[in-house]
Image: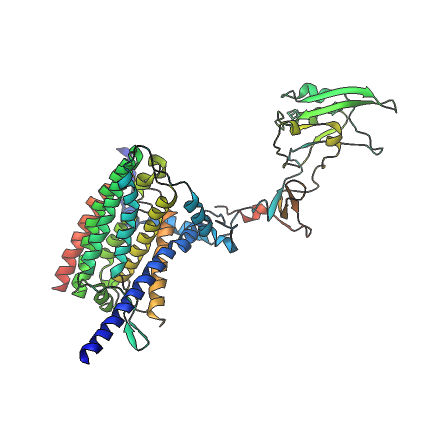
Amino acid sequence: MIRGGLIVIELVSLVVLLAKMVIVILVLLMLPIPLTWLERKIAGHIQQRLGPMRVGWHGLLQPLADGIKLLTKEDHIPDEADRLLFTLAPIITLVATFALFVVIPIGDPIQLFGQEITLYLADMNVALLYVLAVSGIHVFAVIIGGWASNSKYAVLGSLRTCAQMISYEIPMGFAVVGVVMLAHSMSLVSIVNSQADVWNIVYQPLGFFVFFIASLAEAQRIPFDLAEAEGDLGAGYHTEYSGMRFSLFMISEYLIVIFLAALNVILFFGGWNDFLVPLPSILWFVLKVGFFVWLFMWFRFTFPRYRYDQLMSIGWKVLLPLSLANILVSGLILS
Amino acid sequence: MSKTLNVKPMELVSGWIGWIFFRDLVGGLSLTLSYMFSKTVTEQYPDKEKWVPYPRYRGHHFLNTNEEGDVNCVACELCAKICPCDCIEVVPYEDEKGNRRPKVFDINLGRCLFCGLCEDACPADAIKLGQLYEFSSETSQALNVGRDALMGMPRKAEEGGKVYDAEFSLLEGVSVNISADNKSHDWWKKIRRG
Ligand code: SF4
Ligand code: SF4
């Protein structure tokens, strides 16, 4: 009898987990659609243009039109390309990006049908480590994609991307150490819970500064978008990609932006903890993440691109010492 | 060397403070933010709006006619002589009333550079450059416009330099018509200066 009950509980939790997985995957696949629209609108209005206006109300259906266009384009693989790796690279990017969202919690647990449902797929105790490690997989996809394309622009772009990602992942990793010291945990859920009273941005302004800049570089957004510098590299590692494969790269790029915005919110802006106005925790989280996504876009259409050596010296000579000093000072104060 | 000596220490200090707090970056961000919430300057041509050019605009030619409906042109061929592109061809004849008029008056708009010299040279106030600018065609023959067509072309704009509400129509070829309500706005008012 008891064993039967246990099996039922196991089954229910399995079903819940599967349902959550399906929902997360669907939402993630859908998210780039409004984001491309938003990005083009913001770009337009910053430059006093209207942005897309023709398809649907204020161009709302434009991403669908773009999607249809990309899907119906010829699936082109260059003659000299390594076919296996060329087809593999976009899939690796997408898988790596989806894997990142496994540990992202988006709100307090909710009650549904008498079940307590947690709003994350997994609460690892080393979630932060997992996040930093898995975001490194993206580099492989970039190397493979650039190399398999067999084109000088793609190779140059992928080399730049790798150098950039590696040199910014280090200050990024150091910047979160302060947060871990404050929360005594690497689990993202307990990091958020530890900020119930005061957000980490108050204690860790320097850490946030370093982390934010490093995440701009990780997302390869302007002013750190050297990997795709249209002006000198065509489009970087995905120069040779077109149609569906190209759109896979685009989807993962947008997802990484969302992911980094979410990470900024979770680590430094109190996650779903409310501020002044009590709203449902998910709503707070979405609002904050939306703000960061908007911030990324605003930056993109304001700043010019850094030169490559400037990019490297910012990473190694400014952000790295700053993040180390941050650890030192936090450690001194905490002890 | 002398340049560095001229800098006052206070200026140096405030410059450094500005540098530390990213004054230039913040300035750029606030500028783009204010642009984000300012009016857009986009003209939604052709299906919503249309620019009607100023009266001084030099568009498609037309030939003026007098009260009797005859063309003003006296076929003096001055316009053909002065045209830098050599794109006007005039053949004179004497009409029923005994006036000298052009039998043939062809302008090759494919060669014309819309300099307006023909308009300036004309002694009879005949050839003018109007406000029509939508006359692209699929064949170069269609750009060879004859006398009767030129007499029927729209005249100079009474007023212009405004954006009118417009409608896009595919009924008679492709055309963009100003809508019936005749609403217009001054586009230059929308431009942010400074
Ligand atoms: S506008 Fe200039 S180029 Fe055109 S027909 Fe007149 S004189 Fe010739
Ligand atoms: S249009 Fe004017 S300049 Fe040209 S032939 Fe006629 S009268 Fe002379």
